[in-house]
Length: 226
Image (cartoon, helix red, strand yellow):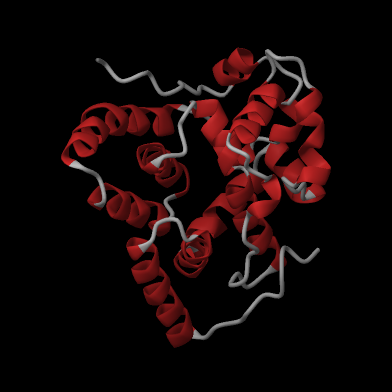
């Protein structure tokens, strides 16, 4: 199954050029999801290979690789019909309150194999599940905190660069809040939770939100101290 649009094969120099250009562009404008995606793909092959091997050793990971579920409206729309206490309903509320669509993710273009392309796309598409589970906002502080967790889970260079780029744009007050409150929590949260890439989230939509958090060792972000 082809993931997203047509993939582009790059030699070493081309890959470095795309990575450099994407990094510069993403640092200048962190809202450019396409540049962040390209940076993740061109610098993240070893990390995605490690994730793939972990998924092959996990029962749920194996099921994901076999079924190759996509987080798109046609496949996750039933979350909007789930009871209020469920993980599915929490995800639907997160998306609806921000007018987000699961169909907005850019396609994978620079992965060499279909298998790695799927893993890269899966990591991209479950991002909003993680926002929901960790109770993180989508502002610059929330995104930076989630990138800390993603780095600890996958060791993607892009995640580290995103944190550096994001914190460089903080005001003094935001920087203090991030490093005193969110960063220590995210460091602990990313280490103590289960392997987030080995969860078949769509099969747990019907379960209680607090129950799945407990099962997966997820501690939501505590509110900042006043």
